[in-house]
Image 1 (cartoon, rainbow, N blue to C red):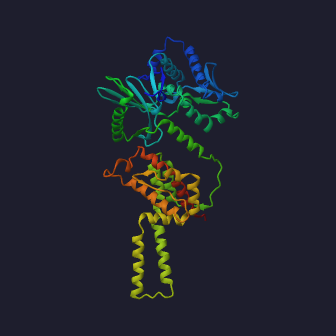
Image 2 (image 1 turned 120 degrees about the horizontal axis):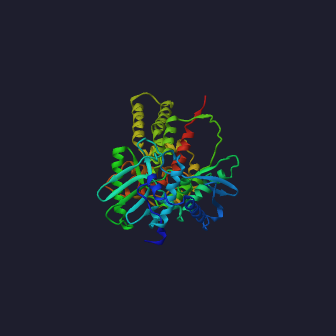
Image 3 (image 1 turned 180 degrees about the horizontal axis):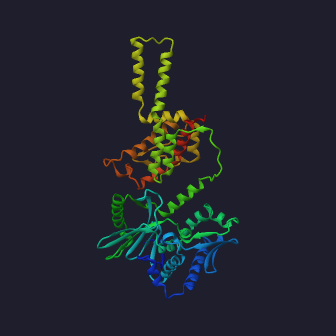
Length: 469
């Protein structure tokens, strides 16, 4: 195993997370001494080269841990799976017991997969797409168990052991940058108006709602070379979960660093606005509904299709407007006479219009009606889309994105229609790389197109808006 993929640590996962067992493990140990060592552990991490410039430190005051920053303080709240997180003493025991396990068994934190591994256990982060209550947020008291003669599999909130391993790794710097510099933690700590500041320990070290799969082998050693086979076993369990409990869970397929940097980019591109003007226009409710669905979806392929539905919704309207204008011009002409010959020409014009209106053509007509081509060209240029798309294989076909006047909209329509077809018409007749399969690397291809789909959707919604009465 490559050194850059593994952080050696002496933290171990406890299969039984019950507070009774935790309390038994440490009942003969002075918790205050353990907690003092734990604070030293936190401080040591923030004294490393990658974090020390933020001048964060921890201290114990009146039997509570505080985070200190530039003269400001926030109380650290122990939190676990205990209902309501109200029993701080039991939560404290669970965290400190996890910290004590540092002296027992070694585990490997595998950076590439953001996973924790020992001889007989692997813990892997997951993404909850939908739970049985039809909510995105996962009920942290829910606990799924699978068992056979050789393995046991548990789905629940990430273990304290996993979180401490991650915190102790170099990768924590990426998450801390999001917490401290991109999100509001720095502002929160420095806010003099907030008198009693508190931060959950789990949130600080990794994330409050992170969930993982813990797969334990009862008969064989686990190693990184078996990860593919283990994933197959896990995916089978996740399918059973989906069919029996209406809960959809996915393994986090993307490299951890890519995923965190993706989050950083989205934060950088978001302008925080709290004050808005009341619009003086009325937006099409159906188009807005499609737009909300796209924004609400976490899956790039679903986002793309929801944005595309905005364009599709206008196909008939725009097509009818075009033929209406043609017919009106024809029949209003001074030479038009309602004789068989002119009627035949009128019918022929309508038939020709219907045959010419394939989907790519209709897509182009919608864009031309509501969007200025110069705006499209500017967007392509400012977002470096040509570099991202040109000569890249997109579901079996390579394209060159045009940024030339008179060509960009037509060219873009063809590319977007191709992507849409790949999402809607998957088939095993084609090579795997030519098809879209949800939750695989093909989602990354689609991610490239999400910014321009969002841009086009907003332009069209604005273009179809009407003045408020």
